Amino acid sequence: MKSIHEQLQDELRDAMRAGDKPRKDVIRQIETEVSTARSEPGFSGEADDALYEKVIASYVKKMDKSRQEYLEMGERGAAMAEKLAFEIEYLGRWLPKKLGEDETRQLVRETISELGVAGDPRASGRVTGTLMKSRGADLDGGLVARIVAEELAVD
Image (cartoon, rainbow, N blue to C red):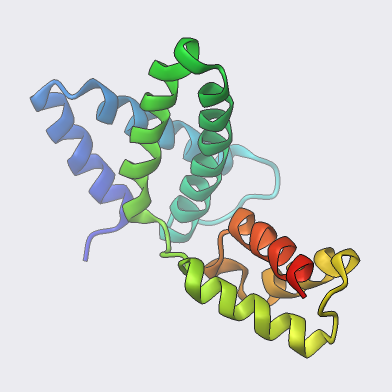
């Protein structure tokens, strides 16, 4: 199987041939972000799939936050929000799959029960922290925070 870097290079060549500017731009941006990460003090090793996944996840998280801000601007931010939505969706194929809302809700309920904090909204940080420490790679932090708040308020 090809590495993420190789896949992106193939995608870049294809985007250039097709004149697909949005795809070309996002691929080049990821390559720039990877180069930046490799040049940071303390980095050693190769630009492997783990580095690409970390960089892509970080970039997607930043772009999703920016997309939300553009959406709040209404008509003025619509075009930029749409561009960022494309980038987020496009890069999603290289991100580990996160659990959906139902699975996340079940984990939240189990953690609340294990910690014995049902009905205590002040325990939301503890529940969220416990979940993110144990299953963080599988979870969407924003979704976890929302569900924890809902579940602790319900009881």
